[in-house]
Amino acid sequence: MKRIILALLACASVAGAEERRSGLLDMRPEAQAMQRDDSMNPGMLWVLDGEALWGRKPTPATQSCADCHGDAAVSMRDVAARYPAFDIARGAAIDLAGRIIQCRETRQGAAPLAREGQELLALTSFVAHQSRGSPIAPPDDAGMRAARAQGREIFMTRLGQLDLSCAQCHDDHAGQRLAGSIIPQGHPTGYPIYRLEWQGVGSLQRRLRGCMVGVRAEPFAYGSAEFMAIEAYLMGRARGMVLETPAIRP
Image 1 (cartoon, one colour):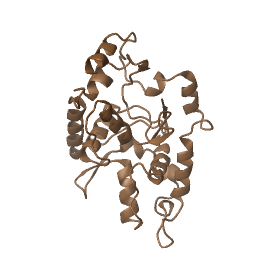
Image 2 (cartoon, helix red, strand yellow):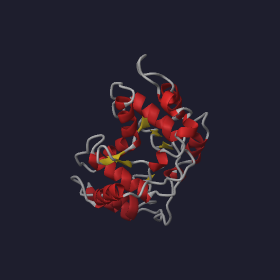
Image 3 (spheres, helix red, strand yellow):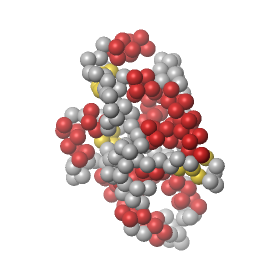
């Protein structure tokens, strides 16, 4: 199987990308139009659900997100562009979804939200949507530099029974075709993202797990330090690119 994949890559007719580019540009024009028109973008349904949850109290005795943070369009502007970030209390990197989980538990006293659960995806989509159009600007403190270094090591490491690394596809062969589909550069510019394959919204970690399963590797657990590190590296790799949440991909 690995020989077949590498042969397909070697025979690909599309030249590799020379500059950073969003996966949006690799889609058909009609799919691009769907992302750009909020009335057609199915990911906006999750954003609207998140907006409703933003103003809702988890329990009658607790506060809503809006009670603490006010108007999300103001308080959450550019927030998604700065995650993952270093969490001093944990002494480790935390992503935007993890921060929402943490906030719900510690400040609102609510039950924890499940990774890939609809409520967490909706809230994360709504918060990230406030940064649409903002350049990715990950923090550069010592803790995050360590996380990015770990993420880069994972990105470059061959994994699974197919013995392939993330870099072999998304760096070395980006812009070429595999089984008829263009291989993207793998920039996390639109998460949470609506994938036509999923018929729903999912996180970057869900997409990463899918890649790991694809090379027949044991995927990391949701919320793991390894996924935080990979996210940190990918956001650093995409520094300056524009956020698109909620993006659409095949």
